[in-house]
Amino acid sequence: LPDLQPGPEPTIHTQEAFAPEDDFTAKWTRADARQLMRLSDPDAPSRENSMPAELTMPTVPQDFPDMSNGQVWVWDTWPLTDEDGNQYSVNGQEIIFSLVADRSLGFDDRHVFAKIGYFYRPAGIPAEERPENGGWTYGGLVFKEGVTGQIFPDQSYSHQTQWSGSARIFKGGEIKLFFTDVAFYRNPDGSNRKPYDPRIALSVGKVHANKEKVFFTGFDTVTSLLQADGTYYQTGEQNEFFNFRDPFTFEDPAHPGETYMVFEGNSAMARNEAQCNEADLGYREGDPHAETVEQVNASGAPFMIGNIGLAKAKNKELTEWEFLPPILSANCVTDQTERPQFVFKDGKSYLFTISHRSTFAAGLDGPEGVYGFVGDGIRSDFQPLNGGSGLALGNPTNLNFSGGEPFAPDFNQHPGHFQAYSHYVMPGGLVQSFIDTIGTHDNFVRGGTLGPTVKMDIGVGGDPTSTAVDYTYGDGGLGGWADIPANLNVNNGGKI
Ligand code: FRU
Ligand code: FRU
Ligand code: FRU
Ligand code: FRU
Image 1 (cartoon, protein in one colour):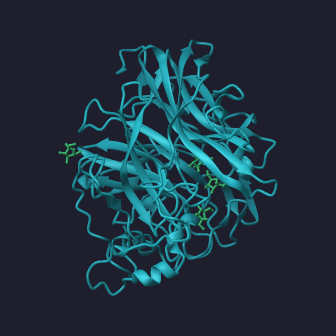
Image 2 (cartoon, rainbow, N blue to C red; image 1 turned 60 degrees about the horizontal axis):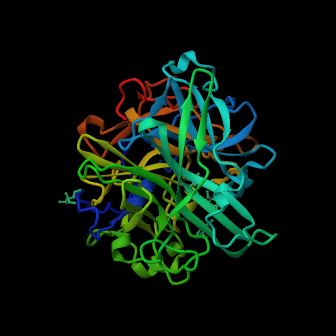
Image 3 (cartoon, protein in one colour; image 1 turned 45 degrees about the vertical axis):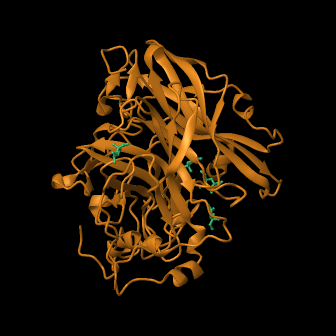
């Protein structure tokens, strides 16, 4: 990593593990997040990346192929996994789930029309031998019209959508699809008639796969599992813009036989009363670069209070869950800690999450991308990766200039500023993501398909807090487009 610019020292984190049930929440502090700006080159000129190459996804070219052959917009995507994050093919077919929307919509209008679709392709073919766009066949939507709306007591919703989640495969081809079932109650002008209602939900189906095709049966009922509680996780009453979504289930190696879930939440404070404290700031004693709690609270930063939640299954069917306290908070750091997931490696627990540049709190800045934290267990005093910054894999970004928006990039911004989002870390450190916008202010194209898979080395040089992009992977670090390979096959002596 480069020499650091002047700034505060990061918070000291021990990585010590606590019991999953304990009331200890690690803090991604402002002192930690300010390392992001310390890593940025203040002299990087217009349209160049100011962040270290090791932590930057290689620039994605603008002439990307479309995985759905023009059928749907595609963004957040997840594979079929077991409790350890292994990715499965079934009878020789790889299967992925994606949020999709009709291409007649503007790409930025997709969120309130999102539905879960699926794709499949033959397993075991090297990326370079596949069609350029990844060779997926679009299988259609997972749910029949009307199924996912039934769980909402108030049926007067204006929009009913399916947001991100994760899919677990079990014996006999049973699939438990965890997702975010969402009802919006909007006025014609887009404002809220009442707060939206996002719920972590489960639907169970069965996969059928042969050489010709993949289809599902089931997925005809939905069980509501969790709603934000207002104690650990902010509710719509506390903030109509609250975030509560993106379930990812797993088994903790330290607690075999139990199933846990991480998800995106916000700290449970009322929006107009939220305050951050000394521990959220995390400065070391006497740090000359420290801010005061008063300054931070007066700056608007307390509007940004993301957290990562933990829940534990109460039954084997995974239909009953209880909340545990959040494992990470980002109070006065960022408002969105999306699609959290765990990766277990060399005895360490790695917590990854995605965040946007625009959701960093006042006084902070960092690229769109994946952020990571390492500890000795699933509830730990997590150490943000890479010099305490937390950045694992960011888009090429120039922090000396504003970002603009995906539909209007800033004139001085690097063409890759919005190139990828919603990254998901896979076995072997492979990372997939979708393309949002590629190009400069005067020449950009919107994505709506998966980008090239890249590879991240985790634990570089034996240092568990260090990761780096592997530029020897694929073409200068860019692997196959939409490449989400299975590492196990269900009917091939695999683990299931
Ligand atoms: C019990 C436990 C604790 C330990 C933690 C690690 O649940 O084994 O003893 O601190 O879990 O995950
Ligand atoms: C906008 C929005 C954003 C959030 C996204 C969810 O419609 O609610 O606030 O980032 O959609 O994906
Ligand atoms: C990430 C995300 C998820 C959410 C989905 C909604 O791109 O904001 O958190 O489930 O998109 O479109
Ligand atoms: C903060 C905020 C957050 C919300 C986001 C939506 O200004 O309103 O509460 O998540 O912006 O864009």
